[in-house]
Length: 267
Image (tube, rainbow, N blue to C red; front, top):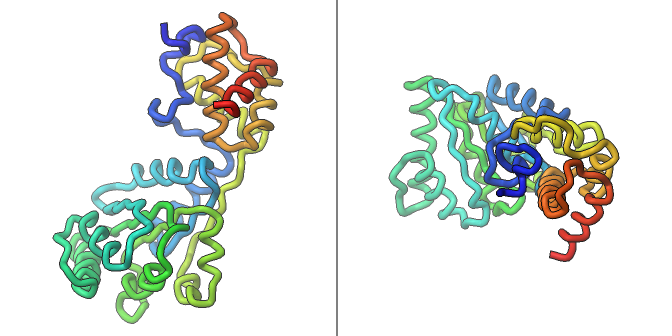
């Protein structure tokens, strides 16, 4: 018997490959509001936060909600490419046949953005994940690549997602032209006690939990041990289910949390 079944769960909601579950924490709602503004107005957006905070998950839900008749989403996480490689990759992801030279791909991508915007009435959406690793030369190109009609129109949405160091990079004097075009910038924080409780209980409910599996003190202990980082919360909760199954218990308490944290730190 799979260990999650002891707790009457249909599946383990804390594993990465489990079903996609929307957790409407305060940060999640704030991000969705700002992304809605971006989809209504176009331009550049920035979402920052350290690993495991749920940046990509929140953006994925937003992108999935966009109508294909109005938006074309292009996603890339290959942020360590050279400038020429980046242009070729962006052209490929846009459904184009990449050219050999950077200048050719530049013109190709701009022409396709114009075609989508003017002829198809569709806004291209470029989502660039792990953008804190992006080459500075690529950031400098964005201002020109997405410049239309002498910079009087935004015909695409460009969303950069990365760690907090992305803001530091954008604050450099050399990136001032790009920074001036940013219309949305949001930094994702760690979950507080209340949002951690919502996070854990929503995941359990989605997996069919008939009743509370973690007692109130256990949830507080998880928040403290994880520092409110969703990815770490998942690891602790998964380990708790494993330990709980091995010990044949029905409710997870603080003692089990301590055991789980110790187990994770030793692994």
